[in-house]
Length: 103
Image (tube, rainbow, N blue to C red; front, side, top):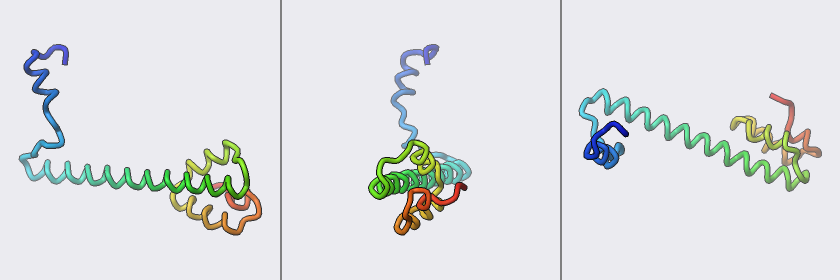
């Protein structure tokens, strides 16, 4: 940016890439696919993080303060592992039983 003339720098800063209309069908298709994939990945990541937060709260309410290792394990779990822990927490007598075997 430093080597551009002032007018070019202002024009570049003023551009809004979200409003750019791709001219080729190829670009429209693959840019659209990439954006859709990015949104889907973001939603899945957000859902996993949300479930982990709820599960950590449930575990803490049921078993008391959680060791950091348990928090890290839950935060690092995938959605299927979180669902399995969420089911076990309903009937588990101990934190270890709720967490189940290590993956």
